[in-house]
Figure 1 (cartoon, rainbow, N blue to C red):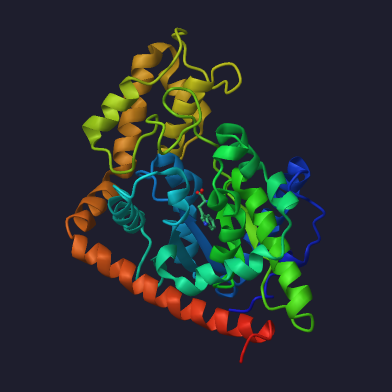
Figure 2 (cartoon, helix red, strand yellow):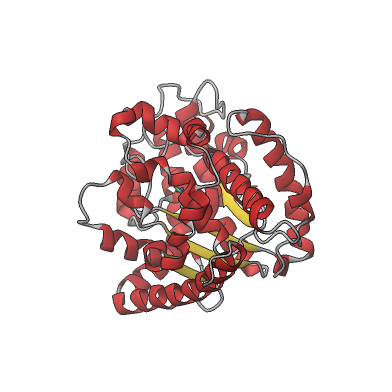
Length: 370
Ligand code: TRP
């Protein structure tokens, strides 16, 4: 693959981490021209994306990004999937459960169709050279720039500046190392991750200017925004891995029924799709619509005056039907932990080989070969 193959990467963007709306618009525009470029030449793209092992993946992840990753893999785009286990330590105080969460994530990836024969699943704690890139990268951004990053700002608000640890503070720079070590030029992310990607692009650009002006060494990767609507959790607030308001991919049919039965709705018997006025009902309709590949309005019309109980029955059936094959596959791979570990070990080896090559070249470019 070639780092400069995407025409869209040359599109100029004046977006900064603070001008979120402008940056989002620019990314959206880039995303649609990218889709075109990917269709024309999938093999010129390498995707790096990943998740923190902080809990089971849920159907929001599936429609938001997992499905998209697998589709791209299946069209010939190279896929690298990262278990961000070093970033997971920013918000947990004990290592208990981390190993299990990591292996579970691997099972989730395989269940949704990531094919370890052609794609790479790895954990970034196992790829030393990737992490080493963080040192030169840290020198390319100012503390003020990191402080302006909205995700970091949120953490500062939540934990207070004194409660924010250094790794959390430098998270966007670490993420740049995750993406650039393998020269990924495409990062499918949610909107909330766009400011991080902007940091990655800045670091790539500055590295190239300073150390490799004649021929840019790192690509400036593009975000690929999901077109799927954001799903709300079953309590009507943001769906989150650790918020206990999501339907995990590996939930059983009965658990799914129970979770959906407890979902928040309203007392209006007539079911209509009105995201602004009835967000909880609209989100349930959206879940059923995504599962059945219909529109939420169609589902609402089918339910009409039958009320929330019927709505929940419809959503439960739609989820259980759609995820039955994924759940079956997940049960199969989860029953063989040796296989899961072997998949991860193999991915780690591949990532290490790539990272070693990159680090060797970075040392040359930085005149640190003695
Ligand atoms: N920050 C992402 C999250 O919180 C996880 C992640 C780590 C990631 N490194 C990445 C995503 C690189 C995309 C690319 O979910």
